[in-house]
Image 1: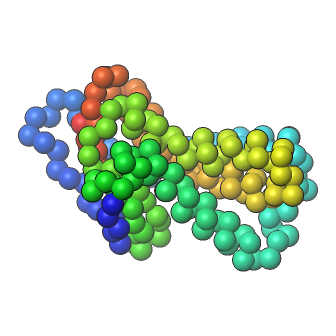
Image 2 (image 1 turned 45 degrees about the vertical axis):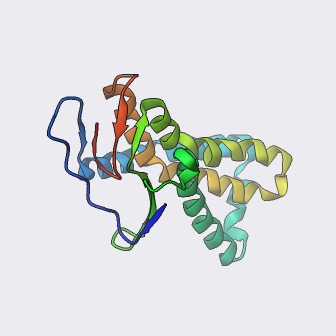
Image 3 (image 1 turned 60 degrees about the horizontal axis):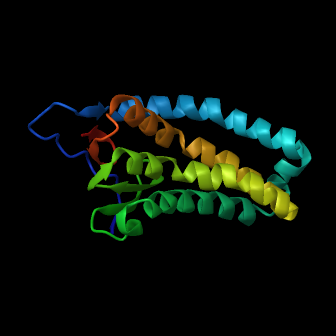
Length: 188
């Protein structure tokens, strides 16, 4: 595993262009915001209808360190959750985790070959664990509903890129393909 202090530039595509999907970073950013604006209200409404507004907004009644700590924790666990789906659980030389100061984001990437289904699992793992699982945990741990709701809603906003990239891979790549990708750029 490598730690980087900025998002690495995309590697140039190989000489043979067939089977390559090029992901334009600007287009990814636009779709990420659109997806977040569509999915975050859905998750918010699910929490509000299930537990009520007074409970899910309790995070704002907590001391500021709880809100900030929960937010930073969700960002870090989101990226680590991607890495759990990497080969060797993120400990291989092809796994990258880092913090980009320019965009103020954490990121995780795998620069080695992955099957389409492993890539989809890697992309969607944070949604499963940090957006959907908190609903179940809230039933058993009602004292933590404000933190779990914030985790779930905030993670859904952070997962916009994951959803877009997973969609592009699912729709445009054959089921038996091997994906060689980077942070953004081409997927082969």
